[in-house]
Amino acid sequence: MERKRILSRDYKIGNAITEALSCNRTNIIEQIKDSGLKGKCRTDFSTGIKWELAANLPGNNKYVICNADEGEPGTFKSRILLQNHIETLIEGMIIAGYAINSNNGIIYLRAEYRWMLKDLIKKVDKLREKDFLGKNILGKNFDFDIEFRLNAGAYICGEETSLIESLEGKRGEPRNKPPYPTEKGYLDCPTIINNVETFCYVPYIINEGIEEFKKTSNTKLFSVSGDCERADIYEIDLNTKIIDLLGLIGAKDTKSVLIGGTSGIVISEKDFDKPINYKGLPAGSSIIVFNNSRNMRKILKNFMEFFVEESCGHCTPCREGNIKLLEAIEKINKGDSIPDKYIQTLLELAEIMKMSSKCSLGRSSANSFINFYKIEYRDYIYGN
Image 1 (cartoon, rainbow, N blue to C red):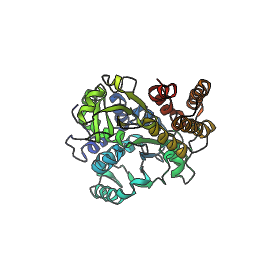
Image 2: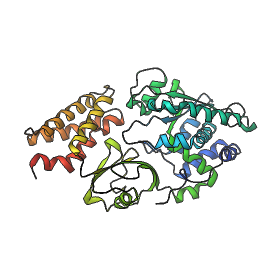
Image 3: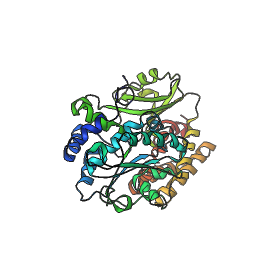
Image 4: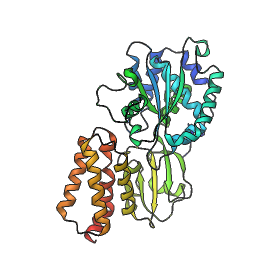
């Protein structure tokens, strides 16, 4: 489980920019497509195809947006990358701007990361002084600059169209799709939105080549926290067994592992000998470890309170469904008698939320209830 690429590789700012600006735009996009790079957040969509869709539209009034609004509980990889690898991120955004013929970059920063903004601006200013940002970058007749915008604190604005609404000064609510941001995004202009990790991979692909990237493309950055001795971000091969990961991070007496954040998959002890992605990697990039001292019913209640609080309220299934699931959890935790029909109704409600909510919050927030029910609640309710 060697750490590589973003976390420890040698990196010299400017190499990838120089290389990219010597190529035509189509060639850059083809490299990103051929590398197989995909979004490192919820969508898992081809980065190269996303860029191509925006590049194919005329004009240069386009936007490159970095989604640095990580609000998922237990997720902090973007914070570490922003603190330690901001130059890599900026270089990835510059290359994206060149590829789609955009002059405008925006880093949309989580409200709770306001404390690092001053330092980030200083680092960006240094890149501007070195001629990597601004007018006529490296004398290549290409203009590109970056500004920071702060989220006001709403979790829903991590969803790309809610993010755009927020940038435009509106209430953060998901838009209907289509049109997609690549066609009609920020200020109705073609817009590409990728997260911090995705942009950080771009310079590596340009510098080292497609084949070198493919050799290690089965790794992913995870924020690892919870009941373990070495909480940190790790670049993990997805074939790594959960039991091996637990040994690496110093986890003991582990009861369960939550992969993919509050709406992810709960893995019980009987499945620790399986690889991290054996059920298919869920959305999000966090791993939270719980030992046997934890009351999982209280944890689920905490998760559902989070979703009730953070739902924008636009979609009825999400707005009302999360409240109903929270009410059910509170009844179960109090020891109230729970009829089988009531449980079945809740599971059906969870499926309705998945099918009919507009954004990923509503479509995935019931996952916690479903997974915890299978592992924890079923035995608790029926006394097994």
